[in-house]
Amino acid sequence: MMEKMIVGRYLPADSVVHKMDPRAKLLFIFGFVIIVFLANNAVTYAVLGAITCLIVLLSRVKLRFLINGLKPVLILILFTFFLHVFFTKEGDILAQIGFLTIYKGGVIKGVLISIRFLLLIFVTSLLTLTTPPISVTDGIESLFGPLKKLKLPVHELALMMSISLRFIPTLLDETDKIMKAQMARGADFSSGSIPERVKAVIPLLIPLFVSAFKRAEELAVAMEARGYKGSEGRTKYRILQWSTRDTIAMFLLVALCAALFMLRS
View (cartoon, rainbow, N blue to C red):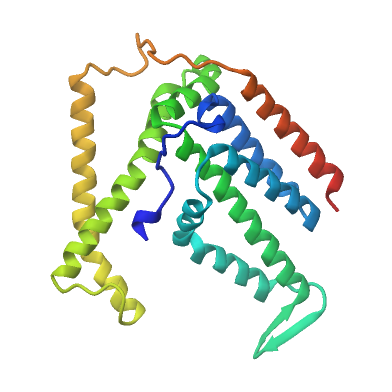
């Protein structure tokens, strides 16, 4: 499961989405996260699904790879679905299990919310899958550049976010290695009661934290050895360039927002 996590991973490829300006991708994703909440019926969700499929096709990221990446968060999606099924009391009664009553409105809302969750994960995951961490840092720093006038450390904040995204798959791989090493020594993470499983995970945290702090120290030493002093006096080797495809993406976002407004119930 650790190897299938897609958050923070970058897949190099020659696609339209890979060639887009990181600022355009960030703006599109921020806008998509907002307007996805405008969908409230089957037609609007179908439109969002079609746009998501189009983005996936343009990115040339295999759909099977994205679906496999959803498996670690499948539990959270199912929890959200059953939460609406059992606690939303709208519409006709479909079934009654003990003290729990399942309503038609609860099932519909659970399905729609789960689809919304899936669409958000698909689109937001494409940011890191199609954009190198350095480009993400440059894009965030450029978008939040006006905040420098308020004396906010925009460059440092963007760098922290980029490093965090970059080290998510690294720490997951490290966790997987530690788990396999402890399982080879007799540790059992898959059987027993819930308290026993939690107790078995505790010894996993200590070497993981030690490894994380070690990597952080090595990164700090490497940056210091290369003369890193924050944004002061820095120049950029890669210059961000806004192109026609980025403008088309913004028009597509505006058109999608207008369509959802017109088609929503």
